Image 1 (cartoon, rainbow, N blue to C red):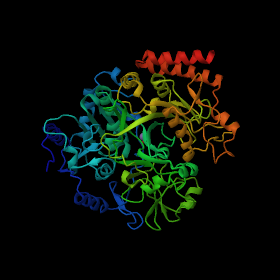
Image 2 (cartoon, helix red, strand yellow):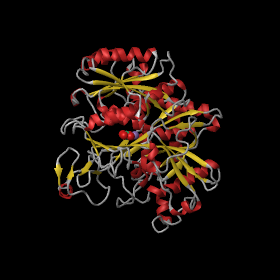
Image 3 (cartoon, protein in one colour):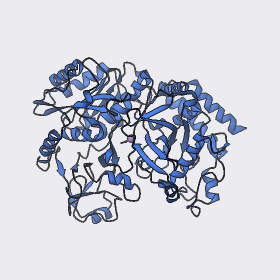
Image 4 (cartoon, rainbow, N blue to C red):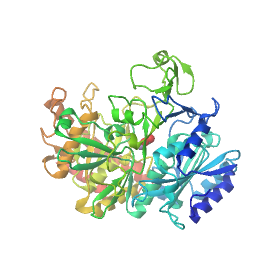
Length: 605
Ligand code: OXD
Ligand code: MN
């Protein structure tokens, strides 16, 4: 039964049913009975069925399920992801583009009759707390129960999502997904931002098929935000509660493999805990931000769960994330521990199961398999865990107004050049710093190690329009916010010494940097003005308890601004702006070129 009278929703569902021709259409109301029945159906499938999900040990992992995707379908596919705006210029140099009509003509035959013999599930969902002025409605059509069960964790899913849509509003995002034959040659993740529409076909991997996440909450939402005066960013949101009970909220954008989920769920060092500091998680991946009634910038996390990378998550690196996964969680492409029907992944602990099933489904001896160089879990294997499981979830998580942001942090993985932390001179300079976010490749990725990859605002794969216009939108938001704008900072947890050893302990000790950032926002600590921004004065980063590791000499290295390296950095940024952006159709705001000139002049002084 249709769960809404909204005529636009009904007309679009009818149209998509006519195209895909499912045997049956099921509207997802979000009720426990319906979800239990779908879980029973998908776990009853025979072994070997690609849609099969497995129930895990219900005593140790109550409510938890396990699924494997096909080996050709384990990650987002940026080369097959498109932004189909009416002009190529509107999509800009960081996106693949095709004209909307041309794309539809190519994909329509793939969708024609694709759901014959299958059921279409109609999933209403809200990104953001239902009724929040910052929230938005989406509807995803899919032929996958796995998608339904994941969307139930990642979004506010079900009939309630339609509550505020009314009968005539057109303000909802239309997502059409079919796993089709999971054929990698016919896999497309396509966005029509001018029509609030997403088409995804031939994948069953989360980032490509949970259309509320990257597709809607970043690519479509960034486009909406530009037109409607708000921002959709690839940022975690955390709250630092101080001993006096006041909480400061910070957002932070990092390229992948820089520890976003770890920072979002940080556990402060002992000294800070004794003093009464606490860190609360509002979000680990996406922030929607809009000026509030008081003129400050407010943020919500549009998601309702965490779609986290499993390998590397353990009791030491992120006990809060691990705790999130102990119930009602879906695991994808991790390894099975057949000894007790639980899950395992690399670095979970030092005891890989002897009786294991590796992520592709082969039974193996875990320790031997690893000794021969195998991965038991796929490096991009995931947990989909409800936010409510998080021991440090913020009491403001469901606040429809969001939380007021004091500081925005950018960061990347840089062996040299970039100091541990510095503050921008103002919002425009901060926007420049965001445009300059880059990260060096690690040994974990294929290709050369230490190669610099530009990833502006950590949004390169997610900006749903021209990156130059996106930067202009940042500048406009700064003008609108005026002196109420959050302060902008840059951090680098990954500085190395001459021998390639990390010289900053990271993890919980990053609290020490957050502490300085908060004090800068409050105006209670001075800073040194340098060519690149404001840096901490000697002694102002608290190293109590880690003095042996972070000696004054190490701190000097962490905070060094090397003139030669920065001269190279600025030259590289000029090359990037000119060759990679401007020459390829990106309209870089003059104000950002002016920032480059200013830094260069200061370096040469
Ligand atoms: C993610 C990503 O999965 O950024 O969050 O790739
Ligand atoms: Mn992400």
